Amino acid sequence: MKKWHLLSLLSVSMMFAGCSIQHYFILGNSTDQTISIKYSLEDAKSDKALFSPSGEVYQSTREYFPNWEHQIPYKDLNNSDNDVWIKLGPKSTLVFGALSNEKYDKTTMTSSSGKRFNLKEMTFSVNGVDYLIDKNNFNDFFLEDGGTFKYVIQP
Image (cartoon, rainbow, N blue to C red; front, side, top):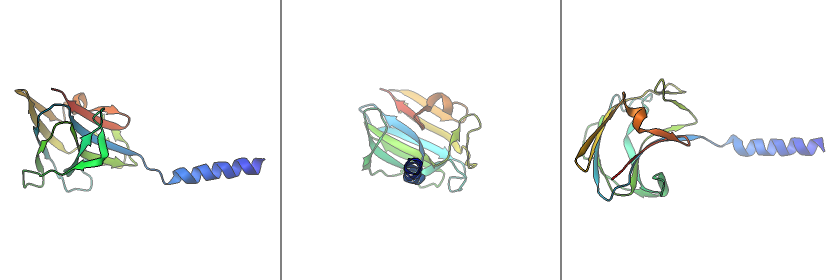
């Protein structure tokens, strides 16, 4: 009987040995309009950068998480390595940062492997209201939801 329990435990351990934990930084658009999103990064090409200039856009789920099966092509309207300007369509989600098998500490604004917060600022306008997100107010906008740091633009 002990052998059976040991074999079961070993089998279960082997199944989960290949699992990875993903954390994402996402911006959802719940409006019916296309929104111009601009963001600037410091040292975007560094391997210690938390955010990337080569984000991805997906159709949103009802909770404004990315629908991973429906990626949407987009074009960066800015040719700079550190600046991004995209048009985020209605009911879509921008993924602009990801961590694999590491945790983000919102107090120190670093990951467990030493990746650092490199967002200078993110701007967008909705219904005539201008939004500016930077290091000082990032945690007020992007709240953790199951390991994903998410902000949903409301109409």
